[in-house]
Length: 330
Image 1 (cartoon, rainbow, N blue to C red):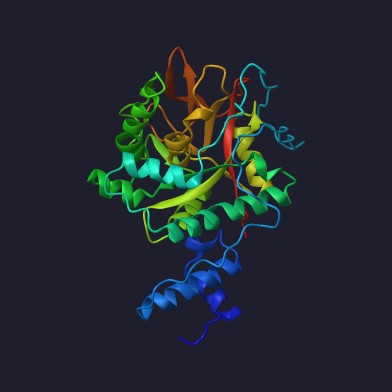
Image 2 (cartoon, rainbow, N blue to C red):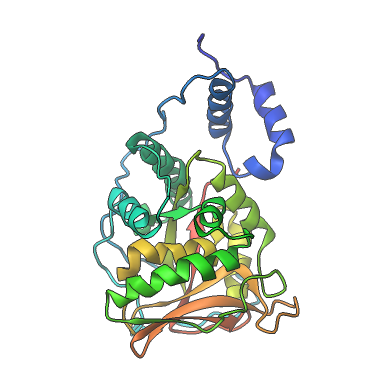
């Protein structure tokens, strides 16, 4: 096939037609998607990814602590000083290829694609996080890289009737996390059992929902990759974190759908009482199921168990930090 290079007009037309799906993609990534869709239409195999890591970047092999995000003067929400007895552990991280193997063993029927597919998904999902960190003067070595499974795949594997992310987490991910933590001699408890699976209890924020949809469209198989920043918002309440991420423009609030899946392959980051506890500001939660959403989901390790619960969005806690996902947003 003659080499095809999308024009700027084609890129702009594609953006207009697919706005919700590609709003978080650069022009280069839209052009790559147009090229791959053209090849699919005429029956040619997808090309190997031309994506490369930003200059000087190598995948972090060990978690790394770093400074706190500075609270903006116009942020009215609660922030407290972090408790130094609850910190991100500095431990070895699970490499991407090993992490994919771990998911495949826990989810029968998972289509992880080929080695080149995985490499392309890795770079496609993580490179924007690295670029965002560089732009914000955050050390990208602090990123925790991990694979996660799409909603459509979890629905298919579990033979479920819904793609609601709370229902999928409760039915498909938490059951595996029970095994993950059992292997660490810890229990797993979901305090929100039966109160996650419908919109009146749990919803993603609009921006996070759009971001997730765009990520899921990146690959033709069942997994995607993301990179999390865990300790930059230690001591921030959910409302305080949302204010900062909205102003920054290159930070996505962590949704339970992605953050809880991180524990499937990186549970060493969250395995002791003195590990920093996690809030997930990318979701709105109402523990009464009245669609008021005063809260967000959280996780902590306490008294021999990993526990999933909720916190009020306006509250700040010295032992907790909001998990965010840096991403180069255009």
